[in-house]
Every structure is written in C-alpha cells, then in structure tokens.
Image 1: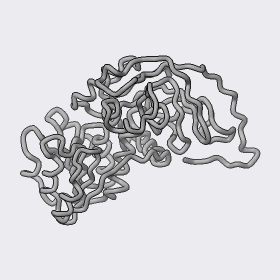
Image 2: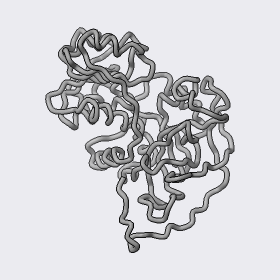
Image 3: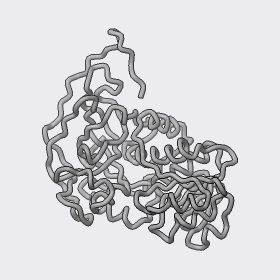
Image 4: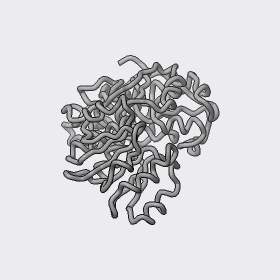
Length: 340
C-alpha cells in the first residue's frame, strides 16, 4: 500500500460522501444448502478505525464461501445471524477514515474483506481494512477484477512466497484450471518454473496457453504413473478425491515440498509427508494489499490474466453456489452486484 505525503500541500479535502442507510444483500439465517441464501434489506455497515467503505460492483465466489454456507469453512466465526458471505470484491470507495487517505472517495479498488468477522461482499456496500485494498487494474472490468483477490493472493502466497518458484524447478499443480489453480500456473511459469498441471480433457490446451509445460489428463492416467522427481506439489484437492494428496507423495523427490491448501481435505498430511522424508506445509491466504497491487501490475501488463467462467446477478447467489459445487468451474464465478 503506497501512502501519500503528509505534508500540508498534499492533504486533500475529501468530499463528504453520501450513501443510503440500508442496502440489498444476500444473507443466510442458518447453515445449509444453497437455498438458504436469500436477498434481504440490511443496514449499510459502519467502518471503524482504518476501514474504508466501498460500494461493491462485483463480488467473487470462492469454495470457502460454499463451505461456510454449509456449516464448515469459516462458519465458526459467525457470531450473529443473518450473516452475509463473500470475501472478494471490486468496487468504488465511498468513504475513507481521513482526508489524505491513499484511496480517496471515487477510487476504483479491489480486495478482500475479513468475512465473517465483518459482513461480506454479497452486498451493495462493504467495509474493508485499508491494508487489504489495491487500485483496480485499469485493464479489467469490475466483474473481472472481482475474480482476482482471494484466488490470486492464495496462488501468490503458495507459488511465490512459499515454493519460491524459480527456473528449472518442477512444480506440479493439481486442480490447475480452478480459481487458485489457473493463477498458480501463471505465476509459476512467470518465474521460470517447469509447470506440470493436472486437469480434465477440455482444459488441457487452455492450461498450456497459461504456461504449463506439461499437462496430465487425470481422467485418462494416474499422475503418479507418469511423473517423478517433482520439487513441489501444490495440492488444491487433498484426499477428498481419489486420495490425490497421498498419491502426490509418490512423485515428490526426497526433500521435496508438499503444499496442502484446502482446509481439512487431508488432516494427516504432515505425518505422512514426514515419514517419506518430504517437507510439507499448509497455507492460508493473506489479504495483503501490497501483494495485490503487484498482481494488478502483472494483470495490466498482460503477463497474467483472470478467467471468469460464469457471472450471476446478486439475487441468484444460490444458483452461483450450485454451479460452484458441481466442481467443473474454469477460473472464477462472479456475482454482479450493482452497475459500474
């Protein structure tokens, strides 16, 4: 996050924003199937401390949203009902905590909210910590930008900050065509790694376009039968499907690194990896505005791109969750919340 000078000549008087007291939001009154999501009229949240109030134009849908809605994921942090889900957003700043704030009213921004500790982004307005914001990439629409934050920051943290992607490094990425996966492929390739991606037949050519040097059709072959001496496995599946996590240990070199991303998808990965002489770690997304600003520059340069598979209107959030839970999304699903 880049702060402006605090010299008097740099201080800008922010116009007094106007916004309604209530807003449309999609809420749930208790955990359950997608049908528990319904539209309601709720109070516009009040920012405190360094939080910024943003008018949400579009909101990204993520697997953690569906898990939380179903009573898993982050549901334990919900302290009151009804609750509003949604981490990702792209929108316009409405109110800032002080006049010389680096994102003055009217600035187009994207980022993440700390849902469910604060109301989420399936709503017309959201409060966002200043350090979780970045300017929206100029080359992207709000719908495209809303598909970036959580997935891209997760991929960045896994590939760049944890795996330390570099030339000649062999990185295997499972579920490579999904939200996190399609960014992970691009970041790893950008930093020179030899990327191996697993996917379904319809996505193999697309994964090559994103930068994968090798692709494995998981419907035709078992990846452990055709791969070996992998330095890093980015496991976005775990053992919930065909014991993908456990099988990944067979392709890692001694001392290689397993990065297990989905929460609860393979509780015993640490012990299993250690028994094989393999390093391992989980990963949780860090909503870092500075990293997101770097990703924005990569998006504007064309070095990285976001793919939005489906767009739903806010009131159709339940349908968006049903589509996500089919497990065949290429890239991201986004909610269109309001007009630009």
